[in-house]
Amino acid sequence: MNIEQFLSIFISAVFINNVILSRFLGLCSFIAISKQTRPALAMSLAVMFVITTSSIITWLIYRFLLIPYNLTYLRTISFILVIATFVQLVEIVVKKISPPIYRLFGIYLPLITVNCAVLGVAVLNIDMFFVDSRPLAGSFYYSVFQGICVGLGYSLAMLLMSGIRERLDFCDVPDVFKDFPLAFIIASIMGLSFLGFNGFRF
Image (tube, rainbow, N blue to C red; front, side):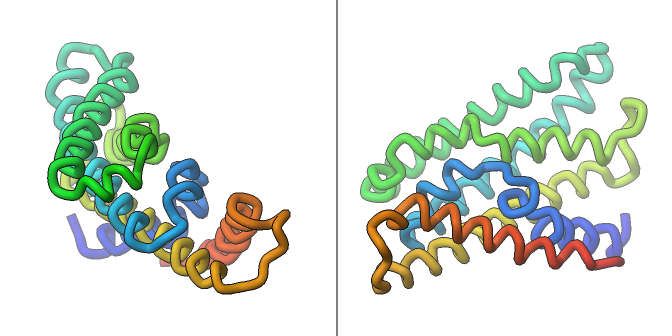
């Protein structure tokens, strides 16, 4: 393990390969929940928790269960089960702590289960930090840190988007562009702007 590797993971996950604006994963919640900052922040925290926790559990399952028993072909289905379990946990906690936020999320909170960003990170961790079914040195810590950083990248995109959309509520926008059409245009411009980070070399 070294600081340079952690810095590389941070810059890559948050800016260069942002899960939403570069990899285009998790767009459903990105477009639907980003109308206001408060629900966008709540969704970001929920997704970050699920991604980070799933990164921990999926690494352990892959390393100590799937590899020793030659069950690596069950990777995807086992990861989906882990993610679904933690999404249910998040749903219960949000419903208990903040019923208004829970009602605001509606169907989109359970949809974290099928959020391809969460599964994508779990699979990416295995592909990056395992070679020939053997974990690289420090791969567990790298996987957890990458989960956190992907969550930060998701949060950054959500908060930027919600801030822009809140400001646009005060603008005179033609009816044909209101709501989702304008959201897709904003997302496209944000995606293009994040392509500028591809010039980073470290």
